[in-house]
Amino acid sequence: MTHDHPVVPRTNEEQDALMKRLKRIEGQVRGIANMVAEDRYCIDILTQTASIQAALRQVELQIIERHVKMCMHEVATRQDSTDAYVEELMAVIARLKK
Image (cartoon, rainbow, N blue to C red; front, side):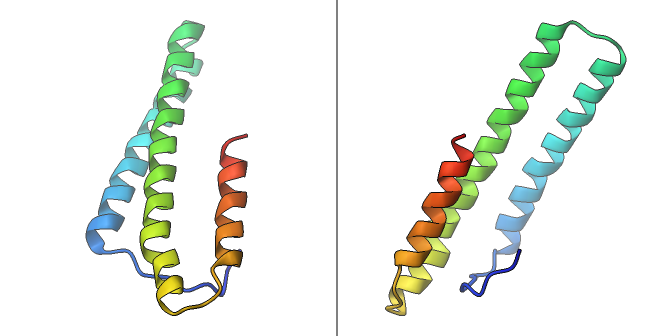
């Protein structure tokens, strides 16, 4: 899905930090797959899935914070109507909370 919304490009540092987190999460998911393949104790697997969910929430929060600070700020400084952007963000947050 693409949007015609203004995008403020991420800095190399921002992109590197997000990619580092996502690669760590990817490794955790592979670890869980191995745990399942090894028929490990259910509680140990669930503990790891909870850890991954928490890590993904942190990624989401970082992206939301940056969106508000950069992308939505860019819209506001150009004096565009921010209503559509706020509605879009709130819809995404509502989906994340399910």
